[in-house]
Image (cartoon, rainbow, N blue to C red; front, side, top):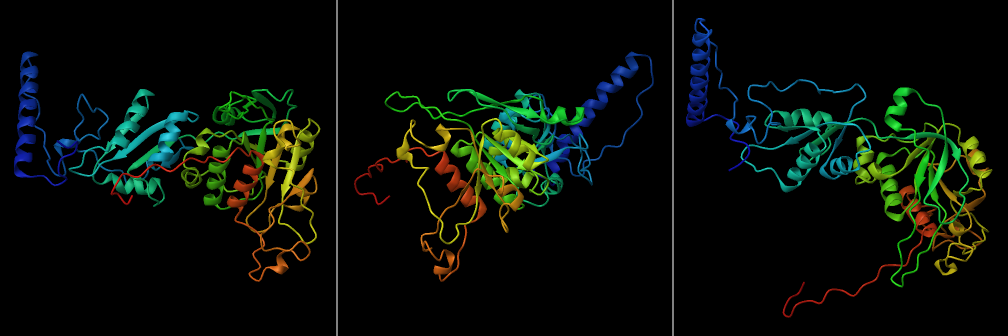
Length: 407
């Protein structure tokens, strides 16, 4: 039996509704007469657009009640609310609990069962005392508005903005095995603090224990982004940073794409679990952090005559000269078009590049007939983060195929 009945009423459907209304009217009449009052005033009963399956019940009290008009505009719980959409992004927000979550909308077409994924999302929301609305025909238009016309899979979560802690600089890291490092907080209003928090500690993700039982440690690695304006690129960078083990992402200035629902979905939910920071003055942030022992590496396109030193080789080992075993590090990435601004690049401790396989040492990109001088910023960021945080490549034998089977 489906959770929702047909959108259009049928004769037997109307009969059920009418019978229900009669029983309700009989009970009200008895109450009125028992209290010495006249019969209750007659009320007009409309069955248009009513679906029995959409009624609120004891088992599903969050269903949109019958005869509720679909709103013309988006219903906001808070003026600062934003809408996360897509099952992956919504599940990540529900599980991380870093935001204030207001309401979960789950759409189900007539005659369909609630999908297993939506059942999980509903249980997660209800277990955290988050209001759930199981919406029916007509509400899909509102959900489309909430997602700005982008695919939402019938799943939208109203929430406060994602925390992005304002800071002035990074504090010293005392030891290689530290589990946290501290930041110097920047001033924020009470309302901003309610969203961003005031915790000045950032967790450090150390490599897992090797099969031989050896535990290695490293200094923290952060990523600074300046001017990445495409939300798809930004989401992909956040996803790679989380997957590869970057400890924090710093947004410089006001030129980067916002942490919009588009970015959140492109990150596959990784943004909900990543430490996100913001600085207003990039140069001041760099200088404050450098004075506390942090090293800054500016990503730039390789130029002709550049000399490349393989300082990021995995063969250096935990006791070698790999940057993350020497000091806490920040990788700085610029915009899609022009890269890092010169005033930021000039304060870097070193420039890091990814040389093209078709670029000669003396001519650089001029030796490439296609003149491909760089990578997409999200790809370049992923490669550089992997070089800094390099771990052994996972290789395993393919699964044995069954006899007589092609796949």
